[in-house]
Length: 200
Image (cartoon, rainbow, N blue to C red; front, side, top):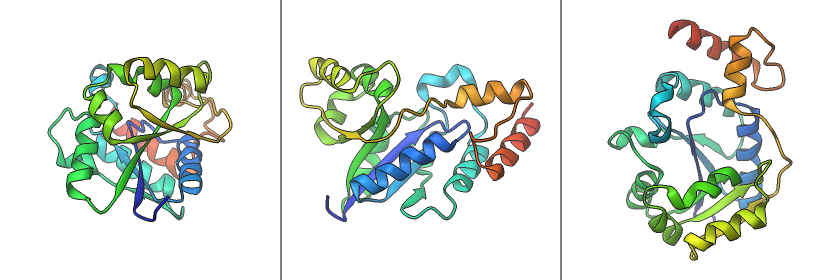
């Protein structure tokens, strides 16, 4: 891939964890391109969940990628009306960074639901997706299913081990007073505990 490629990794990142870091790092290596991690201020599909404030999630994400070559945190969605959708973010990137070709990084569970996303046809026409395997979503089968609704979708498999870590599971462990060792870096855990205390 050319040096003008950028991999966009959007998400709630509530909190960002080592699974996110592994996924971003492998995308950087396998796509030979920088990865922009972009937290969503208020994800449309999670409006009822009241995630931690954007400023805390942005700070935790910056801490997660500190010192990691090729990974950058970009607060892109602050430039967009809320709630913003992935199609809006990708459109903003194409219009404001025309020198780059954007790929979009996601898990196979997200690819499974892609046909129901707002603007999915535009995304399928304009963007290539880099997809990580997820438990319960066999890659080839998930791609075939997606192509029934979006025949033009372009997908590249991200080679990575199955990492069954989710932000919601981490939040649950935190609420039960259980260890987060091996799930988030110590600096992120410190910020997470401060954020939860400040917003409880």
